[in-house]
Length: 212
Length: 119
Length: 270
Image 1 (cartoon, rainbow over the protein chains, first blue to last red):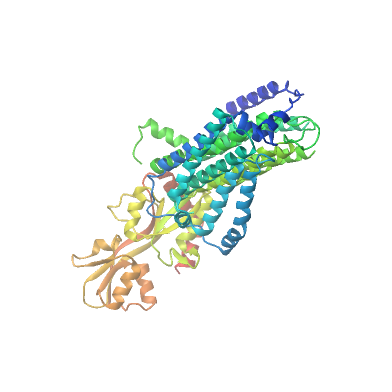
Image 2: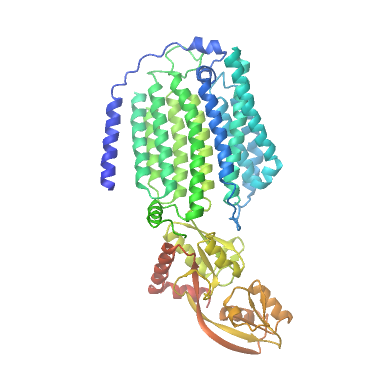
């Protein structure tokens, strides 16, 4: 059975390689500078993600929010009586969280705000924000952090961010306002949404399996 | 040249990931294999976007051909959706672990043949 | 040139990650592979994709796997603290049973995690599936529907009497079987010992190992000792985990054959 699986996999990979053999050399890229200038951006990928293919990005945001809601609903019912003891709090963790948290958040905001001028944008910024919150949770304890940052209101902030993105994007699609201000606003809102969503998902995972 | 190496790497990663998905018995190993296979697919798309001697698709980085920005845009959302799908899949795995106390696919199939006995 | 080196590194990391036996190493390997892949994206003139892959693939994905794995791939042992068999020594766990269990964990490629619970909770937690193994001087009782391994160390139940008064035992322990109707029960052996010392109860029913420890530490001065029944310590395994029970049985048999078990018993119990 494993031999059969290995042979069929090799055959599949050979077929893939054969199919790819005709794609090189690639045709030249059409000029993209005017597209970027039309949307007020210098990063062409940002202009595409938030401009030309805005519809796809909106649905991606909705799917991400659905994930957050799905994890909240799914892991709500599981509670362990004797939690696995949490990771021992070491001074190294606390000290590194103290030192690193500021630069990480500033870096994330910089990536979000300058997403239309250089590489970055809302998505990596949100992921970095989620990781920063997790670092803080490792140093402080998950439940304590979630109480201190008022997690229920944070979830409402995320829903508000989604509504704001839809409103701004809708305004753009319907009324045709374009410009770098719009790009900055949507990038920051996406970063907020992705970051809070990642934190909520990680918190649910941590609290349903025992303390982190 | 770089595109060719990257395409070869992408096909190798996809094969490795699918092999792991098929052969391993533990559910979480299968998810890891799926992750690596998805990385291979994403690398394939980005490698197709590369041009010889290309620069990143940002205006103002100098003359010369730029990489194709469209696959980059598609891949950007794909990576984040990958993480979201992984989170939901792991929720299912956690459910399964709580109720059946196993993550072994063969044991689950055996249980299913016997009509899901209570463990 | 740099692309080829970095691609080779990425492939090597992926092969390393996906051919591991332990899930923990697989997850860490996939995280490192994601980071190397982000480097490859930089060579392919895709800085946005590289940033997103590094942030999501290396940060979030690894963390979520680790959080999902926190209780799986571990052997959860619920036990009552009982020196010299299984006890907490500062930051670490120590004892005869701990040595056996940690060797067994290495043998089956799983981490062993000990949770300290009172004796009466052990069968309930095993049946509920919250733990895999019960330990800590576990003496089997007839009505507890858990799987048992082969005997670890033989002992016997004794009744000690210090002063006239009621008898005491630990709740859930085998000693409860020998209590007369007016006997008192306590949460754990430590409380029983202090109750004996304080004179709340006139005697206790416990296993020889505990009684010997109490006498040696001078907590009690027994006047009369009656031996009740020969029994032996075993490990309890959750019902439904026959694989673990069989593997632990085979491991214990192997330890007995090579004489390692006798050596460990001599070192810890004396």
